[in-house]
Amino acid sequence: MKTNINITELLGEKASFYLDHVCEKITKDELQTPSKSSLDKVFGNSNRNPQVLRSLVQLYNHGNLGGTGYLSILPVDQGIEHSAAFSFYKNPDYFDPENIIKLAMEAGCNGVASTFGVLGLNARKYAHKIPFIVKINHNELLTYPSKYDQTLFGKVKNAWDMGAVAVGATIYFGSKESNRQLKEIAEAFEEAHNLGMATILWCYLRNEAFKTEKEDYHTAADLTGQANHIGVTIQADIIKQKLPTNNFGFKDIGFGKFDDAMYEALTTDHPIDLCRLQVANCYMGKIGLINSGGGSKGESDLADAITTAVINKRAGGSGLIMGRKAFQKPFGEGVELIKAVQNVYLDNTITIA
Image (cartoon, rainbow, N blue to C red; front, side, top):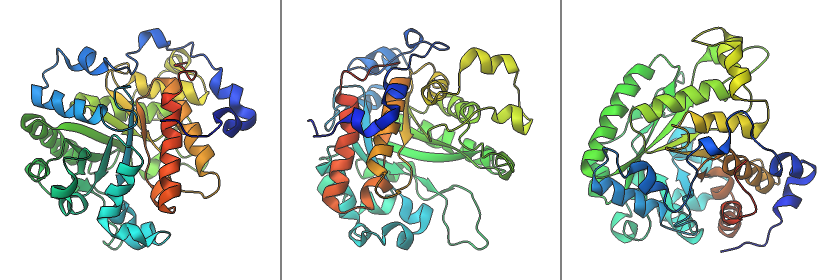
């Protein structure tokens, strides 16, 4: 599958900045990079049982990126996380859950990630046609005043019963509730593995102190990298993380453990180097890092998505999980946008930096 796009043209004057960069702090030779044999190399001697391996194979071998070691996942849980009206007013078709699944299938995604309700309502029709990833916890926006806490919306067994190959969950690292969430999701992931399902962790940061007058460190490479490292510790099989936009969170906020020398030794301020630090925190790439596509900004969405994909791939990441940029557009445009992103991972001239 190839789409008619010019990646260099879309990157514009920054094409060389992204495509020619070489990571010299953490080199590509130190990483486990995505390939068709990645699963065997990483999980072949692990404690994951054969049914988990089968679920991972189903996910990695499906769709347009099947067999490449890369993932393209459509995530749509914004109806809960961001409110349904706000999320779907640009394209009301997606109030109907079936259209979410149809978008993922038409775009050739590896899988579709959504809520118990969305996937459960269509399980008998589609669970055998595209891998289901059930998002088992959410932050809902109807509580007033607003709070930021991830709450379990169902049981792991419910996801298994509907034929899901994986469960997904979010932990808000840094929040007051993070220890409870960590315990809940570690137990949920253990149950999912026992049932033969793979696990995907949204490793997001939430703390008012992470946003200062000068900078927002919720996407700092050092803080998000540490969140990733905790995520792989509870045996997430795939990590979802926002693309890093800065660094020095520990140092500038003044908490945790840090040393000026660690920043100098591990990374630069180049976006690919910052993402490389995220990958390194996922056991040097052995656990796949998929970056999120972010919100829709309109006309710049294609260029923004391609840039994110190039950064992720060249950093040693394992793909993109992109929702709003696709489902907040007419169906056909959403399909083409997802396929354009997939083309980055299919293009052998775009290499690991």
